[in-house]
Image (tube, one colour):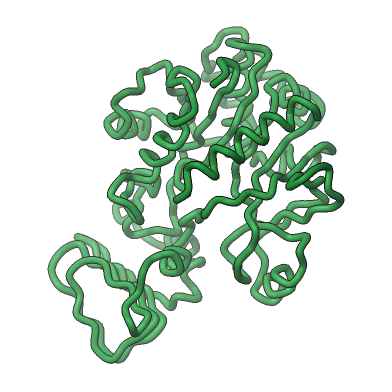
Length: 346
């Protein structure tokens, strides 16, 4: 455990694809979906197993930070980096990197989503430490890749090129979530891996990437870096952009480590269905449900009783105030549905 190993958890998202269970007031990372613990609690516990507590930072807004503090009571204000408003992942990672670099210019930083599920902590820890060893020899950004086990339209993909050393590859390009036809092609091609969303890099290298690839944002980061606070005026001038589009797609030195841990981004109801145990009719039943002559469904009920009959391959979610019924193969489209719904139900 080295003092210059730091960790950034991105926790400002709303998890819209898990609506109506995931809401603006309690997004996916605060839910206990696959485990009795919340996803962010599991994420922090995973990192704590090999990190100093003071070297872990959560980037979020103030509203969610207050809720996360109750979930992670061992954290204090120093563990939080507060965004005045959502500006996407490049500013979030940039600000945290600048602050950490001020603490330790030799820092090696790992970035994690707050709402993914990893069941094998030992293999995950090995992947992180192997990545540290790699970055002692090479300059660049390292991403943890997952061997694709099926054609999936739910995940982004990484295409790799030549091998640099065992289990390390040079990245050729990142691929957005494909349609099913492309996903079937990818699963037959050993150059394609799922993108776990976990990145490792040296703080000094990453700030140089921001300087050359996102110079306007870098100028704001320098001011933030010097003050260790976020000026509202400077923040409001930042143009939202994702880390993928702003940095990863333009950076030249990006590598992938072929990871061996079991992973899911728990990104939507259909991916959750794939991950959970099923009955003999391939139904996932969560809560108080009666299922009759139906198969391939995910059914969730947190109040009362839900009865499903002669229904196949559906997602049925019943909460206190909203019931969602959607075809399982269309569950990725929930974000589009939410745009038409009143704010009080979001």
